[in-house]
Image (cartoon, rainbow, N blue to C red; front, side, top):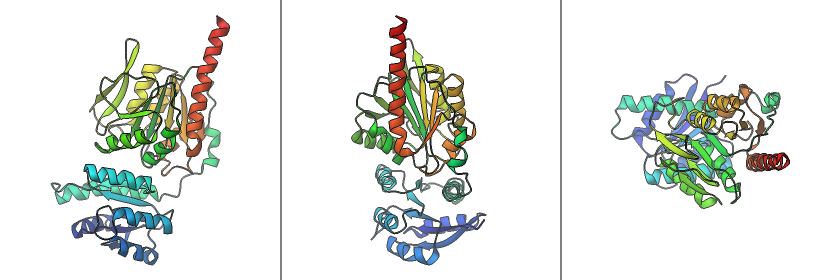
Length: 358
């Protein structure tokens, strides 16, 4: 398989040098070129034909957002990874970039990082993202549709739990705003993101949705139509306290190298709600959520996954499908409709059964 060609775009000489050294020394990756501005990057893309572009956000002249818009216009399928700072402004602009079609993002090493530490962070995080985004060897969905199982769905759905990662902010922006204002159950979400990013994501979704969307808070009682997003650097769990279900946060050991982790949330909702859970696993790198989905399956809950063709990376949903746990595989455009249909059908069917028994 040919090496993955990467174009590095950053106005900082130090950052270009750091990325160049890491990428050039990584097997399977080739540094195609570097560019110190958006305009230079746009001129180099047709010359070097990269497989991936890493793009700084804050650049003089044509900034990262403007450059991204032009890349998306000219090369709609070229993967772009935004390189941002871990600041409120950097997080806000990164979310804007993701909404405009950026494939993924990475926060820059801090100024206090040693060179070795910075190179280790880039090699461990950025290289993984690059290789995942250009991996073309995955099986197509049409080959594994037989993995879908048919859940009886006889239990009323009382909570919706969603797990996602790479590509997740855009996926959530398509799903959550489509849920109706009278949605009858609470929604709990893990989106792999650092602190600050999760709060801004919640604020953005809240402004777009009919439901109230907030970052998770310890002790918050779950109610119908509430949407809670796990805060960065904290696992979020659901626990029963008498008749109520409430959120708890902790900083226990990361799972699947993630905190928050989908597996942690899914295990907790399986324990708190038993068979009355609908879980959704959407686009994301790795396999976080697969073990948690197994817990939900064991107690009789239902599991939907996003299909490969509409996923930025099919790692997380693909892992659930490979384990034979998916009740249905849906394109992103159909997930909200399927959620509403299943929740409504489960609750109306249970109500009808109760009336018959009475």
